[in-house]
Amino acid sequence: MTDTAFPAWHFQKAGRSLYRESLETPRLADDEILIENSASGINPVDWKFIDDNPLNWPKGRVPGVDGTGIVIATGKGIDDEMVGQRIAYHQSLKLNGSFAACTVVKASRVMQLPGKMSYEFAAALPCPMLTAWQAVSKIPPKPGSKVLVAGMGSVNKIAVQLLTRADFEVHALSGSLTSEEAQTLGVAAVHRSADDLRQQYFAVIDAVGPDNAAGLVPLLTANGHVVCIQGRIEKPVDPAFTRTISYHEVALGALHDYGSAQDWHELMLEGEALLDDVQAGLIIVEDPVLFPFKELNEALDHSKQTKEKTVLGKAPD
Image (cartoon, rainbow, N blue to C red):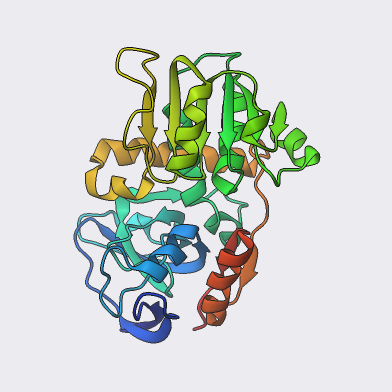
């Protein structure tokens, strides 16, 4: 990596593989920092946007929302004591992202890494961890109440643990979760099909899609809550003034456009606390599958085909 340019993977067009080309080091705004990436997390949102390009990315955009690394430069408004800090971040989909040797991010939108956590392990965490926290925070405290979690990907595996820590009784609707995994995560009961469900729940967290979530709304108690991680339920299932269900949506990326400075301050504090809990073994997270930087397109395909948490290694100098 030179002082003026660094390697990066670039968007070409919807459905096409990314191409590798050097990117000029940008000038930092007063509130920005430059991070030398040590690892980049791959999330479903990355390959979905590469496949479909819903934001009309121009050719040359660098994808990647999750990354970890070291701060190597700061804008004029940022204390240069940040240089050298080990951090993790979640980047806006509207800006150049983590699939590069370096990424520019807002200084207020990063989390410091626990001392012993590796960059590769931490790179798998920001998007699923923060999304899980947002989803669970939508549900009011009600210890002992039952919550149904549908879809057991990386987000809901963390959400389950946050729910059990809040003294909810968690049931899972999943065709893949094993009994051993359920016990490890603290799941009280596993249901293989919605047809098997014969009880009511205070809340549902759904990571499958809005149609699936809507189909689970009849299982909610009066004044219950449904939280959609994938999309949103556009039209209430029940007539007005009946069971008065609360409908929630989660969109971590939208916070980049609509979140206040205080919103980000609170989220990053929560994120750092969760990273500490992961490091301490209080939250269990599977090790990601690691690919070298040169095999990004293979890593994206692996993530898409297997749904395993996948991480890209450090770019070569």
